[in-house]
Length: 69
Image 1: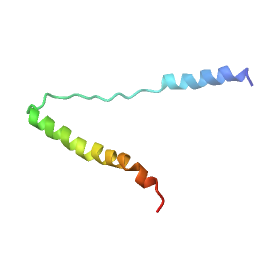
Image 2: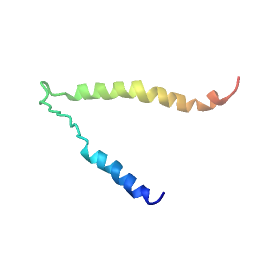
Image 3: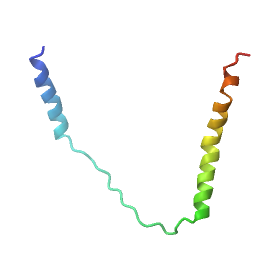
């Protein structure tokens, strides 16, 4: 069985070398309008309120969830 292992591995790696790799053609343009300081502040605040605040509340009240009622 150990004699066949290198041949098997060589065959498997040979298949991956012959497969074509598709690459994404990603191009971007400069933004039409620059983001202002207020826009960035509103975006960061809304992300904080939507994602971090509920998870923080759950973690701070974890002991009350563990209690069996």
